[in-house]
Image 1 (cartoon, helix red, strand yellow):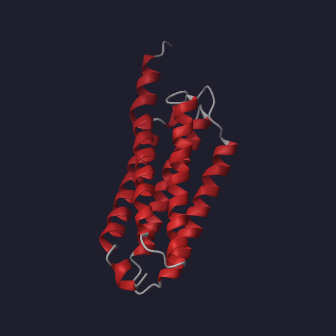
Image 2 (spheres, rainbow, N blue to C red):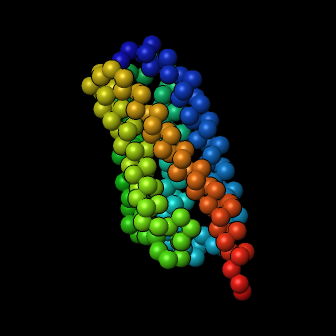
Length: 175
């Protein structure tokens, strides 16, 4: 891929970085609102870590994409390392902070499976795009779009859970 082809994605990368930074801030607000409830369930901590680090990943991908004059192979390697590192981090965190009965909001097996699949998509699709950039394959950057959608879906869904559902359900519990 040529530098001009990467440059044609400039606006996408800028938008991705801006949206990711904004959503990370929203997640922190939601976490602050529900902090006392969040600390009662390890699964909530894992969801928060995943949501925040997926936005961090998208922010990094956006920033890497706007570095001027960067060779496609270098951009590809940055995507591979970023996606791999984020997947490793959220996997390790999820292993140590498993969802349990105390993290019951949207905690069914089906919901957990959807979250896991989306997290894999959000991290592995940028890895695949990076490999495509290194190998000079056509259409490789289009893999970033479903990765961004998966990341946004998980993060917005978790922001809702943190800011609205956890406090709402806590208020409904009898003392």
